[in-house]
Length: 383
Image (cartoon, rainbow, N blue to C red; front, side, top):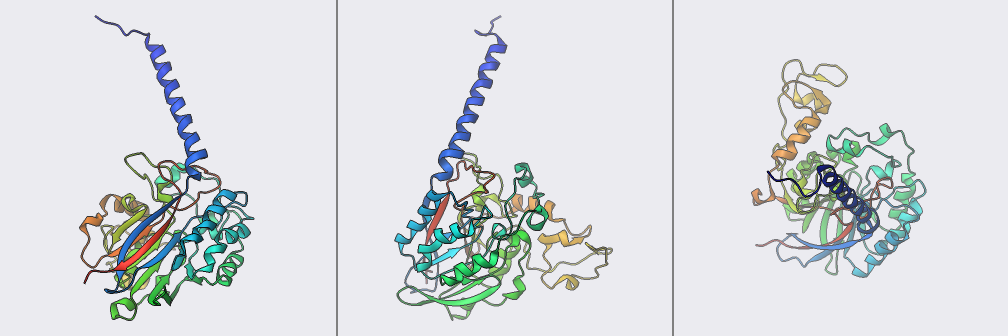
């Protein structure tokens, strides 16, 4: 019978010491190095009408700026050297009650170029320290429920619009972009994470389907599937979003564990494909309401029409009914059953989700997920 060379308690203590040292090193890397290791990503999306010259779109998102973060401010400012044809900012610019001037200073050189923006929750409300485990079940407080202060969003909006950027909050706009004046249609909604989105305000057939523009592009802060489905059902050629932070704390060689919304983790950042039903359920389709259905206020619901012709089965927190899944359960189910981009139909849209530039000031860490901005080259579709 053989015995270990060292007593078991010593072996355990060495293993514990090694684990602690590894954890300390990982925390140091995440908090001191990687969160400041900014990356410029370059991707292509073939979304323009055949024969259209390429366009370069700079996508910035989730700046989450604090006034003292001069390194981040200067890194964003120097992106102007790319001379993009257009800039899209998908929100969450702020992470401190005094951050609006810093955010506008960071974006200042980029406002020398045409651009557009939508807002995220951290453009409306001050951040708050949260239990990170709540991100695994979507139960963390949002918006006014956090009981924090509110940003002067009018000041931020006025700063961006004074710089020439379009506010796409529940708006559909046409722009001409690039040296050739390529016509694009842009549509956006307010933040789905706060349930401020009202797609009905911008719903309608994409102008690109009628050949009136080279492409129709949806812009949204948080890529909730109800909005992705609605935009692509109307014919958007691409959707551009942020919010997820790419998972922020990822597992090497595995990837993200959470998306902070109902998007599946395979699409948490970068380029993928989307179409109505890519989540496993097409949320643009009305569903029948069974006997005994009640609204959240307790009043009866006799038909789907009573809650909108586009009742979202994936947004079922609005209805309590045995025949309709509740939102948290369906969110978890969607992440398991989402179809991969490899299963895309021929007419599927392109989706770009930015991992973002920053983080909540109370969680100043990133691991296996560098902060980023993305230069997207829009190219022509094949004939």
